[in-house]
Amino acid sequence: MRRLLLLSLVLASFMAGLTQQRVTIPEDLRNFAEKKVPPVLETMNFSHEVLPSSTQDFVSVEEDIIGSTYFDLQSNASMQNRIFVYDDGTIGGVWTLGFDFPNFDDRGTGYNYYDGSAWGSNPTGQLEDDRTGWPAYAAWGENGEINVAHYSGAAYDGLVYARRTEKGTGDWTLIDYLTPVGNEMVWPRMTTGGVNHSIVHQIALTRPIANGGSLCQGIDGALLYSRSPDGGDTWDMQDVLFDELNSTNYLAFYGDTYEVQADGDNVAILYGDSWTDLGLLKSTDGGDTWTQTIIWEHPYPMWDPNAMYPTDTFYCADGAHGLAFDQDGMVHIVFGINRAHSDGEGTFWFHGVGGIGYWNETRPTFSNDLNALCPFADCIYSELVEDYSLIGWTQDINNNGTIDILWDDIAKYYLGLSSMPQIIIDDLNNIYVVYSSVTETYENGTQSYRHLWARWSYNGDFWGSFFDLTSDLIHIFDECVFPSVASFSDDWFYLVYQVDTEPGMAVKGDEDPYGENFIRFMKVYKGVGIFENKSPDESLKVSQNIPNPFSKETMVQIELFDACNVSLEVTNLTGQKVLEINKGHLPVGIHNITLKADGLSLGLYFYTVNAGDAAVTKKMILE
Image 1 (cartoon, rainbow, N blue to C red):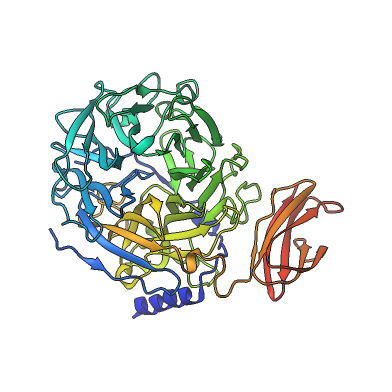
Image 2: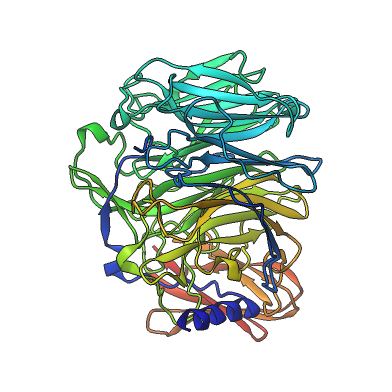
């Protein structure tokens, strides 16, 4: 009965539209640290089902089950490209498949294909001839498809490509990409660019010491780039260690903490986690030359996992992130947030910390201050700005001012409370972000479930409401994780993800009993609610002031959906009004309000924008 009452509250909240107000996690919960384990490299059929559409008023979702697996670790952090939607409406999707637990001798790439009218039968075997894992999938050539995975516990070490010239039909051609013993390539990422997706761009890690490897060019887990003009038959750039990523700048990289995307001649590589910078490498000439941007500078540069030393506690990127190109070739990224420290014997994550950061190439970067990426509203030195560079967090669904999840046993993905973000940008430069978040009111009595959440923005400065894409009744006891979003969208956007009935994983972390996990395909309609400029009860949007903190002046941008009288009031911590700016009657549209620091003392203030009957309050810092 309690579960049904809670579900009624959830559904009712969607009928009214979800609040975006952040609720601060209590300090004792966000200060609780747990020791991390190394990224997993090894571990020692049902009928096709079409699921009903979501019943939410404001978001239309359709789902299919396209496969299953007992091997439930789809990634240690970031997701590979696992789905491609073709111009003709056909779709290919992949995942790591394995049924023979606990050793998974049958592990490999699961693949399914949508021919424009229906998905194929759910696969019971892998694409490859030997044991593999961690696939990445893309279009190839005029009408083909290509997949890469790494050999693991197989007769060979390295990577293996599977490709065919006609997607959805015919035999796969397998091509080995073999590498030296001790420096085997693992955890690959791959995308295709150029004309007709003819150019393969690959990044992969050399096997780290913790997983039985050795140093490569002085790096524990070197991140190497390769490029092929013919689907892996030949390579005109192979196993290249960029100068920006060499041992002068980094001593280690970690599994699944990087990705690569291409759009024509534009190619981008995003990398980073709790123990390295969050960095971007971008090429505009198909991979010939690259420029680097350090998006977040790590407070402990050149930290060496093999000569571990104690650190202070700091907020950080958690290793799960995504990137996309807009129609102008600009890179936009999203990243999960956590907290970390080392005691000299191990590294730690904080299960009460999480959030989704956003950045694009027009934005300033983040410093190496220990609190630069703090996602909490009371963190004075945070450089994150709500609804600007901090765009995702765990929702207070029942609106009681607290996050009511089962804190004693958070499922161990070693990522943030909200993490696994994905981003897509459509042909109108609308931005869609999907992420997985521990979600209150959904639990099994022992642990709380993760659900998939989404937000939308038309410019990256204003963000719409939060919506639970998996709030349907069919997901009431579901753990929804590892989303991978297709780069193509039309009236819908498309993704695949993993779901089962047990929070956490059997392979890693929780080490739950093995059970069947389902790979689901989801399409989300872009034309209603979540993707409209205005929800039914919304008449005003207010940005965080920029810059914040500020010293001389700052700007607040507002968007009005009805013409009305507008004013801005500033109050201090005691509630005393110290400044008021009257803008008079303003028309529908976007307006900027400039606020000068003249006469104000240094410190924390609150500003309230009043527009007709609507009012929005945010905080700002004068320093």
